[in-house]
Length: 383
Image 1: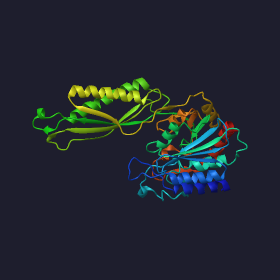
Image 2: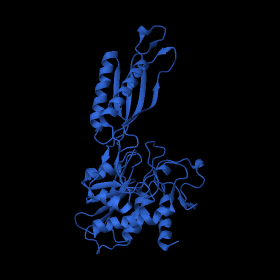
Image 3: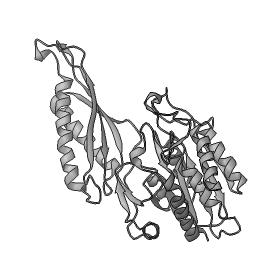
Image 4: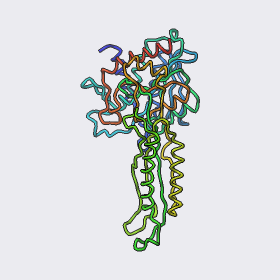
């Protein structure tokens, strides 16, 4: 094994061993500061200028902006430092202890996406600040797996700035220039409880919810007609009725019911517009049925993402990889980096099919191709 690969594996072992779960469940949620400090130490030793941006007031969650070279333009290599929660009992090895077997590196975050950082660092190690005519920026964020608060804070702060950004999410090194957005919503229906023997004594929230669900499914068909995009494997926006709760007894008219759903828009659609349309539909149903119907977001939404097919970064990535850029269904931090004025793609080692799964792994044969690809991108944008 080359010495550089030994160093990469050693760094990934340290990153995996440093817990950084982010979750909407407070019982799971952790900070990422220890991971940020590790990366800052390694990059600082390489001559990068280090800036740590607190995402929470106590600094337990933070972003890292590490810059080699100076001036306008340049390239951002970006990734998130957090992982999803895990069920240790379903792993064949310790999820926080990197295990090498079958030409793979197993560990929590090995592919989604702590594994990207040692490869980006290895790619950067071939260059010095004196060589760079435009800066190389390594960006590490907090909370991508939950609130995306790290990327949101960067967008609000208006930095970092560069010509282009590559987000190293697992795409098997195939460039991705488009993905759907996501919004998660709650619909709460409040009626009037009463004795089930006489429907006139109440106003059923469950029957109202039946109408709500029918209306949402009808709206889903409208969205499919308006925003179909054959570039995606699932060409239409999806609206999934995820869970429902309501009532307390079969002999009582249901007084309250709540539905949670998610909606994933294709580019061309706008989350705020869609939410306003759903709100209007819910208000109409409420008036028709004499119910209270409240629509509220469960998360801060993420917009659809599209980078133009003829943009410099997409054409470069297609030329270097030999793959036509693709679209994916999962959401990333790309819309927030694009807001900063950078051409942006998603392209990194490993497969998204391994992410969020027990025995997550990164293939060893992705290491050298990824490093070589990133170095070619650095030469194009920074030399």
